[in-house]
Amino acid sequence: MGKNTTTSSSSASPAGGSGGALFKTKAGVIAATLGSAVGLGSIWRFPAEAQANGGGAFLLLYLACVLVLGIPVMLAETSLGRAGRADAVGSYMKLAPGKHWWIAGALGVLASYLIISFYMVVAGWTLQYLWDSISGALYDGAVSESALALESTFHHRMERYIGSDMAPLISTFVMIALNAGVLMMGVQKGIERASNIMMPLLFVLLLIFSIYALTLPGAGEGLEFFFRPDFSKITWSVAANALGQTFFSLSLGIGILITYASYYPSSTNLVSTSVTVSVLTTFVAVMMGVIIFPTVFSFNLDLSQLRGTTLVFVTLPEVFSQMPGGRWWSVLFFLLLLVAALTSTISLSEVSILFVQKRFRRSRVAATLIMMCPLFLFSALCSLSFGSLADLKLFGLTIFNFLDTFTTNWLLPVCAFCTVIFMGWFAPRGTLRDQVTDRGTVATRLYPAICFIVRWVAPVLILVILITSI
Ligand code: PFF
Image 1 (cartoon, rainbow, N blue to C red):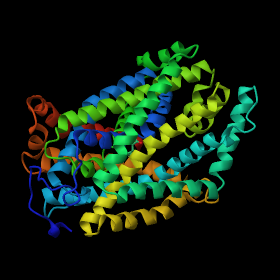
Image 2: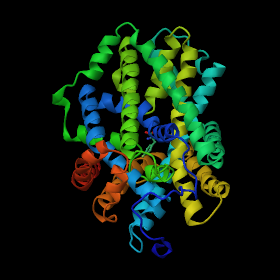
Image 3: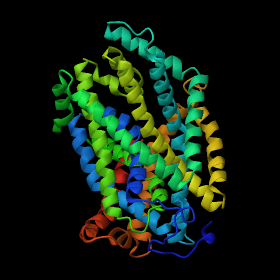
Image 4: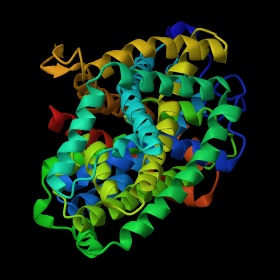
């Protein structure tokens, strides 16, 4: 594989990742990258992690991780992508011809593919819940006054649905087809255009929800839980969880940013792009806290319900069923989640599509079909692991849980570790500096700190996450 490489280059060539395809506008670059970052991780995983890890203390650690680690690692990855101007594997091959670094890129492609297999299933559930909110079926018969009875109604509903084999399979397949449709249209007409439409919509929806949540009686108590840090809650494991959440929510470590940055025009300022995307993603996560905690406190719900699938598919429907006009709030919420999931699945899928396009010289449509068709099978296995394949266990976990644990706890930190070690120590001299500093004096002043973090701080902290998850 290493033999097929072109010569190493540290500067951005004008040709884009797919043989000339580049994002057209600065807004498109931000919207697509932000679309990748803001997904189920910020909307759903973040409030649950914050609740389980001490509220405000977790928020503080998360903010520190984004600032100290997230932005520099994002810069390392986008520098690699824009300098390589190829897929995750090809970018390593271009910067380190004849070496084995391409394996790190291949692991990224594998990780992103495995992650979409189960991510698509949850995205499919969102689609079904959106549909059921529109049709009203989700709330049929949910008239009980007692919170306990409502909770059990929605719990039952969720378990019946995800365990039913056929219905979740259909919605997962629809999600895969939707992704394939956008991806086949290409970088500008597909990814960029979809992100330009969906991201503003997502922010409008978030704004509507936060205004509503903040005006609920008792909202202050929820805000206090979320914003007041209790420093006694900070432990190594809370810190490791905040680090893991940073990687997950910023789409770091698995080749997405290498792939997307190969579509960045040479005029893109990597520092301002990374800072904008990280700040906006963090803003979305904080807004979700501002929405979820006041709501949970106002409706006197049990905080432990925020974990896992319960928050989105049980607790929130329970809340909506008690709100005036709740069905329409439910439509808006599942639309928000669907938009977030869709822009993220598009970016996850693009990693392997560009890989096939570049490594096997296929057209975009062929590459999309080659990568998306087997996904029907992999996602089906994940989906069925809540139904008829529930007893099929890998290392004691269902297929879905095994893939989730294996990719997010293992593969993701390993790939991120390789990226920072490569960009910090092994990429051709000056690659990181040229990419980071080519557009401005602020970037030039920040470069020594960024380089220090990429070389020393990030590898050590990523190793900590890895050891903690072991
Ligand atoms: N950043 C997106 C999210 O938070 O949902 C998508 C994503 C990328 C998820 C990378 C997980 C991951 F490892």
